[in-house]
Image (cartoon, rainbow, N blue to C red; front, top):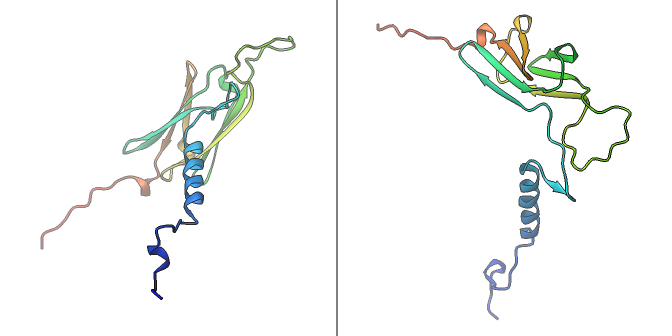
Length: 152
């Protein structure tokens, strides 16, 4: 009787291949952004934002159309920046039949982790034309430093 290794058999099928295929499909589903569910678009994260930095500051720019500045709440806890508020641009009290509805109203909250430590007491925010710009000065220990090398 010949001894044949289990993995060398032509009819051998990896029992984990189906799980790997399902994992890849789930990753693609979660990374694809907005999906179409039965003709209705799935909600996106609100507000959409960009985070950038230079040597001295971190900048957070968020799109908040229809939200007055007095309804925006910004807070910091540790290295987490939270933006919240309320958008009240919905048509109130009327019985409407929507053909397409993508503008939501009501309360929103968004929290993001910042890439470096900031000086929380010096944070400033401005809202102009539906764009909220938050300027977060970096903490002194987070700023890049030039180190001189002495020859000796």
